[in-house]
Image (cartoon, rainbow, N blue to C red; front, side, top):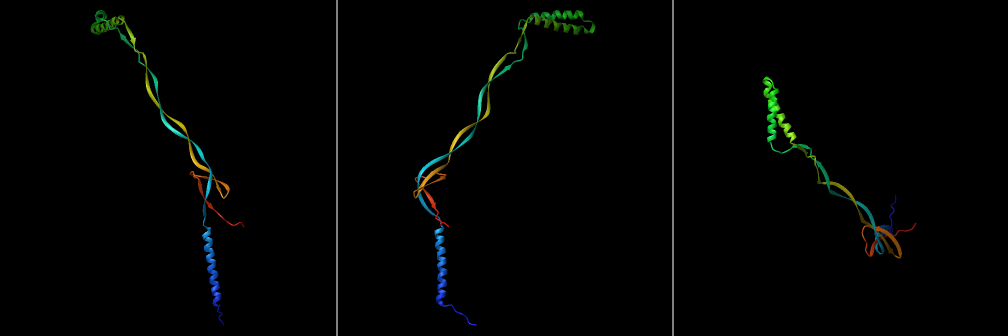
Amino acid sequence: MQIRRFPLAFAALLAAVGFAGSAAAQEYREYAEPIYDWAEVVRVEPIFSVVNQPTYRDQCWDEPVTYREPPRYVRHDGPGAPAVLGAIVGGVIGNQFGHGGGRAASTAFGAMLGHEMVRDTQGGYYAGGREYTRYERRCAPRTGYRRDERVTGYDVTYRYQGRLYQTVTDYPPGESLQVRVDVSPVP
């Protein structure tokens, strides 16, 4: 069996083609990375978002509250002598109607009754029952809403190589905007 040997030139050619292929691949990878350039900003308009922000606070006021005292009977503050005299007369009458061991109780009852009857005739009046109004502080939580406009972005029109483009950014771009240039072949 005979072993064929490739000529040295043929081996060198194969190595060169392999190296050229890897260099072409290396060159392709180098251009596959994005390319950046600057474009002129033509117009910037802020984009607003309206938010109704809740606000919480206590609302306080002075409220009139009416109170009423319960009525009570007040006797006349006159001299006490007629009432004492009435007690004595009542005691004598009670003593006349009492019998035996109940005579002391009848006398005491008559004295009390005579005293009260004379006091009632001296007059008295109903006091109290009056109404009065006081103002008391009342508070209640209230929720209000405040309209709040916020800038949520910017509508940007820019010119690159004579053509106009639009985009939305989170920040105002200034006079120029960095753009990524993507070049790809048309199939």
